[in-house]
Length: 253
Image (cartoon, rainbow, N blue to C red):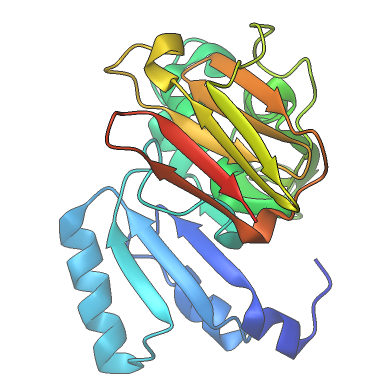
C-alpha cells in the first residue's frame, strides 16, 4: 500500500491479536494514528493500554478485549485496513481443514464485514497453501501472497494481501435462496427494508450483516442469504437496527 503521511494518519486501522508486540508502536512511528487494537486476553489489553498511556497517551489509539472470531461489537465498514500477525495461526492450530473450520470462517466473515468496500486485510502467517485457500474461500477477498525475504535455509513467514470484494459474488460460500423481505418501501431516494431474520436463521444463531452498494447479505456460519437492492445505495449513509420484535431493519437514506 503506497500511502503518504496524511493518508496514513486518516486510515482507520484494526490490529487483530495485538498481544504484547510492538506493532502498534511501529505503526505510530510510520504515521498511522487511528489504531484499534484487539486481543482475546483481557489481561494483555489492560497491560498494553496502561503501557500506551504511560509512553504516549494519544486517545486515537484504542485497546479492546475482543476475540477475532466474534467482531460483532465493531460497526460494519468501520476499518480501512485490518492486519494480524500469526493470530489466525493460533486460532487454526488444531484445525484439520482451515477452509471448513467454523472459527476460521467466522473470523473471515467478521473481518469482511468491518472493512469498508475495497479495503485491505493483511495476514502474516507461517502457513502457505492452507491459509491461502481459507482467505480466498467464499469469494470475500482477492488474495495476493508474498514470502518475506531472508535466509532461504530458515522458515520465512508469508504475507497475504487481501482486498475486500464488493459486491459479493453470487457463488460466495452458499447458494441458498435469496432473502425475501417482509417489507420493502421506497420514498424518493429513501429505501426501507425489513427482514424476518429468525424465519430464515435459527433464533440462537449469531447473524452478521454485510452491505455493498448493490446488495445486503445476512450470514450465520456458512449459511448466507442475499437481497439485491432495486437501485445502488450509498453505503456510508446506510443505517441498520434491530426492531423490538427481533426483526432486522435496514434503512438507507
